[in-house]
Length: 96
Image 1 (tube, rainbow, N blue to C red):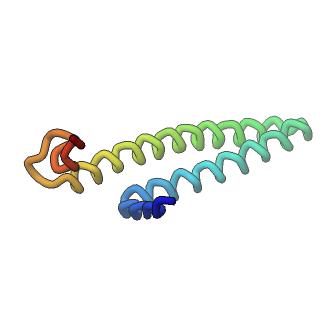
Image 2: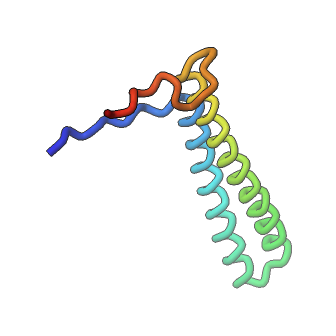
């Protein structure tokens, strides 16, 4: 059996964006739970506020996901080095 390859550690920017995404997800799930309970209690003001906060949370989640994609691209370009435009520059030569 081949030895397992170790995964590279994510760059700091990507890890920070991932943590922000998880925080926004938890924040949004809590506000959706609060909205559900406010709906059961027929509390209109609390429901409106909870749904507004949930909408902001969903927007934040998508923003953070876009940030993850962008920061991964920047980290990949930085890893390739300056002057290397092609994604496969510096990779292993093809097998013969």
